[in-house]
Amino acid sequence: MDFAHDTKTVELTAKVQEFLDEFVIPAETVLDEQLAADPTNWATQPIVRELQAKARERGLWNLFLPGDPEVTGGAGLTNVQYAAVAEITGWSPRLAPEALNCAAPDTGNMEVLTDFGTPAQQERWLAPLLRAEIRSAFCMTEPDVASSDATNIGTLIRRDGDDYVITGRKWWSTGAMNPEAEIFIVMGKTDPDAERHRQQSMILVPRDTPGVEIVRPLTVFGYDDRDHGGHAEISFDGVRVPASNLIGAEGDGFAIAQARLGPGRIHHCMRALGMGERALALAVDRANSRHAFGRSLAEQGVIREWIAESRIQLDSLRLLVLKTAWLMDTVGNRAAMTEIQSIKIAVPRAVAAIIDRAIQLFGAAGVSDDTPLAALYAGVRTLRIADGPDEVHLNSLGRAQLRR
Ligand SMILES: Cc1cc2nc3c(=O)[nH]c(=O)nc-3n(C[C@H](O)[C@H](O)[C@H](O)COP(=O)(O)OP(=O)(O)OC[C@H]3O[C@@H](n4cnc5c(N)ncnc54)[C@H](O)[C@@H]3O)c2cc1C
Image 1 (cartoon, rainbow, N blue to C red):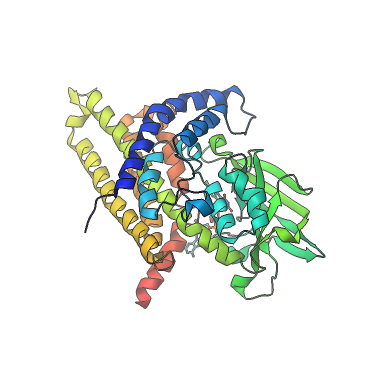
Image 2: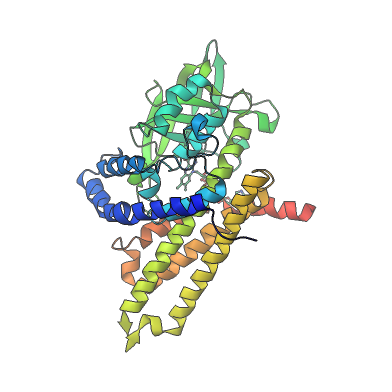
């Protein structure tokens, strides 16, 4: 086995690392200042635009998008190549992914439009998303039903002449508080009587369509996540859009959702490893510089154990993520399902524990916003729920093993 990255990855990660160190990490305080200046402004902050311009100049743009760059407008990286890049962006999850136009949910939405959109849909919505001129949201989860089970979804998409009419309520639509999120991909039922996995469809709903109402923002442990455009509850009340806004055919929604979530899950895991590395680096600095009871924290056995545990977890999980990425590249997402589920479960758990140990090492400073740790913890904790809770993946992974 050759564990080395190829030349392209080595060169690209060096450029991304330099960009992170030189521009992104110093910009974090600027972002905080800009967000604090107007707490009612959900739009993309000027510092993000500045970073995006610098990233584009350096060719660090749309790195998440596979396939032929001439056709897709992406960078054409394999999952293995992108894994190394995404991990670096995880060091600054509030800024780096968006600076490179590699942030969820836009990445997943761009993939859906690339793979399933019509030429007209691609021209109208994908092209400006690839240029980061607009943003988007993905509206699947609903407040009234357990939405880890997509077959529960109650939103109706009813055909009426040349239109579809959408009625329902969504929540946790990430990014939708940002007024620049001009397009929503909405999942709903076109045929509630069809076979369970053929009832749903996906449809493009422009934000400014009559009947779309942003009800309220939601918070994660008190964080409004304004740097990601927040998370919105949205009501769709008799929203009428042309039939040509349907993505794929009626009944394709479930299959498109599955296709969207495979790469999305591994991207989250790659970035989470970067979050864990940053927490560990902060912990090491703190342990070496802080003294208690006559010696540095680094000289306490228990702290050394924490540091060692974190290193072991990060290095072992990175190998599992890279193996998963390699399988996705070589045998496809479906054949890599066991590994995708494994990392989706294992990485957020481990990284939450790594950040938790770093918080403990920092004492009270660790739970404040004086360090990035509290926000990193809040972010990684949601990954045990978002894109499907741990239990759903464990259940399916266990079932697959038992059938072997
Ligand atoms: C930060 C964040 C961002 C999000 N962004 C988006 C977004 O952009 N778009 C979107 O549509 N949604 C988004 N979501 C929603 C997310 O996908 C859902 O929260 C998730 O699918 C779980 O659905 P639910 O919250 O309704 O929980 P439920 O489905 O009600 O499940 C609750 C709990 O029940 C248990 N459970 C469920 N099924 C099983 C099972 N089979 N076996 C054992 N236990 C089980 C689990 O412990 C689970 O956590 C986001 C969520 C968060 C937290």
